[in-house]
Every structure is written in structure tokens, then in C-alpha cells.
Length: 95
Image (cartoon, rainbow, N blue to C red; front, top):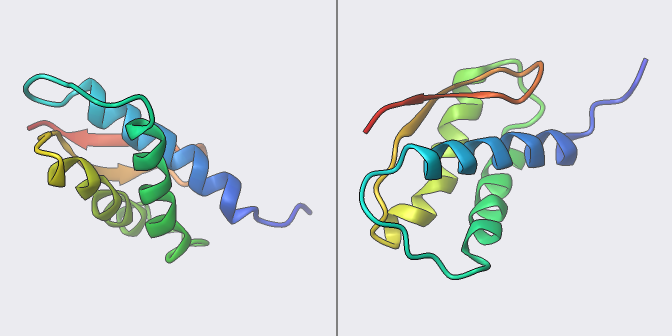
């Protein structure tokens, strides 16, 4: 049996959450080159506070706290409504 790797899980979920947010955002996107990586880091920090968890809703709440990084930059986007804890995929609520 393999041990749970929280950092790898957090990175996978964070990358998916940031990609979904950027794909479904509203308005123009004028990000500096490292903004995406900084956002992934912000989401990972929030996820590491709740992992391991079986609750996709709890992980989604953590993603949304991390995605506030974009909100503070004036970029509106969808909220994450659920995370599949088996594969790290995310479901978004449209803007």
C-alpha cells in the first residue's frame, strides 16, 4: 500500500483549479508570466491545510481560498464547486 503524498495531490488539484479558473474567467487576462505559478502556490498552501481529506467539498473550499489570489488582482472567475479526490479533477460553478 502506498502512502498518501499530500504535496503531489495538492499540486495536481491546484494546477487543475487554476487552469479551470483561467479557462472560465470573465474579462480580459493580463497576467505577468509568474502569476499562474504564484496562484498554484497559493492554492497549494490552502490545500495542504486540509489534506488528506475524502471531502471534495472541503478541498473545493480550500481551492477557492487560494484562488482569491486572482480576485485580489481584479480577475473574476468561477468558484470550484467540487474536487474528485481520486484524480484531482475539479468542477466549476460558472461566473
